[in-house]
Image 1 (cartoon, rainbow, N blue to C red):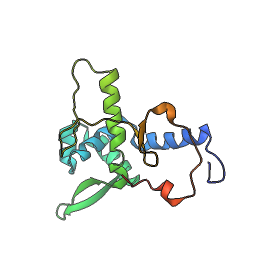
Image 2: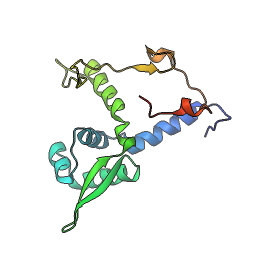
Image 3: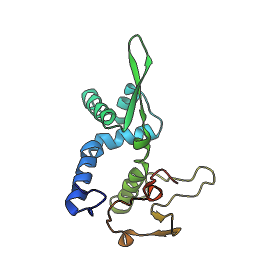
Length: 161
């Protein structure tokens, strides 16, 4: 695994991607996250919305909670009932879901788009892309390269918007 002193290798990138896909990369996990982003919280509501078998839902929710993508919170004592809410890490997956939706609309869709995502305050359709906060420019994948993690705290701040 790469550290701050050594640049990342393709093997490091593959390991990170493999761990990510193991946690959230299957069909049901992605659909559970999408449902949670839409406000679904309770087990029965996930099951009804997704049409997922309860044992599969139980397994996926447990994995997402164990992976800190979702948090399990009790809302009723007798019988015990729980809500599942996205953590900050789970919410941070929303751009990846948008990218997957957009990719599907461009490469798999037959006819019109299934979803239009808009900026709520003004109603403008959202665009997916890369943004450099230092240069204040948008750019495409050709302008990206892998680099070792930077030591400066500002460069590592992933919560800035």
